[in-house]
Length: 509
Image (cartoon, rainbow, N blue to C red; front, side):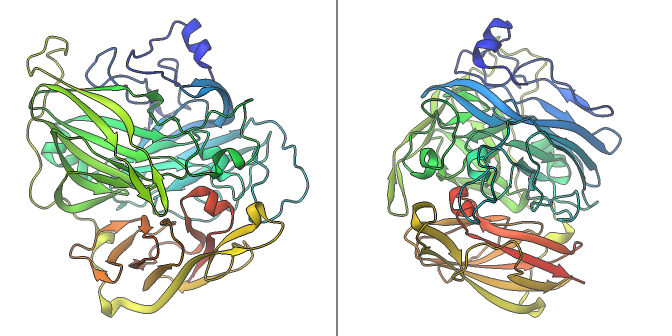
């Protein structure tokens, strides 16, 4: 899984003609006891966007090895070198509630050139890493979803992650989370999707539809090769190559009248990703791994870094369409329109698609499946209310002479910023004092969004990452269930996290 583009071509592997591909299409292997599925178009077309390779749990266990290493690629912006799992994106990991993931993480990056004690809340030690299971409701302790671990170059670490039997079915992802190097590694494409199959997938209209996996990444081609400084990714307007499943402006096929199930992951490091698909019908059925109460028709889907969404997409009429990110302002910064993909709707009876591939035509309607841990958090449950002020502070000698702060403090792993009790619920208000939005991500427990800018939400949706508007507020409620231990909350504009916008939460018995 570490071939360069030149290596892919010389190996004779199939490359979709709709764009450049940066993952191998055969030879994927899982660890003993798990099943591997090769990358392939869900419609069986050579020039159609392929779903990434997958590794599936078998008999309740998913075993896999992820190797963090250097990858030579040629992006549209030029030749560069990336730190990632050997492919853009990494393999999709597919499990069910109650399964166990046994992940062997091998750090095959070269030694860090900066080997001294790092300065906290500055970019440092870009070749040190770890692994985060983003959105999973699992233990933050030991060798589970423990982001305080550091896996140094040359080291190997075995993660064991146990999903609860009632874990919500939905779309999640994995990526590095070592403070100081996370932005550089995610900006290099170190990420992959995780899918928890379950109740949502048993809805007949979802079950019968072709499933597409779309991992959106925005790696940067650095002149001279490897990212060695935050400078190359710091500016929000830095030229980025938006890829879907490792392809630049790929082709995505549907048949006229067909309904497909799209799982979309925004695995970029900084820029927001609103997107449109004019001419097709889009229903949102899940967000951040959590099913909605009922499907919601969308004209524009808004994703902050770290967000995921489950969509039902119907092709109304044969023709050519474009998946686009419209031009928009991310706070005070204007960002241009981006052409993400070409969407081609074939005739319903097109002989290009094998007749054995089923074609769903129905959209889901009415209530979607419920989950035990996603019941409304009422005022009667709230045992504490807290406020968190998001800001910046000038600090001479730090990167750009600044740190990003929560309640006036930059991150300190030795400090417990929030101490709460297991099996209680709290209401938190995020107050953004900066002129740009911050997508706040809380580990371990999903939360219910109850108000934005002081306006109550009619539908109190569940998420694990929420964009706090520039100079605005967000109110959430969260339950601390099942797991004790320390974990973090942070901004998922990852350069902001590396510069200090993160705090520690400690859940006690």
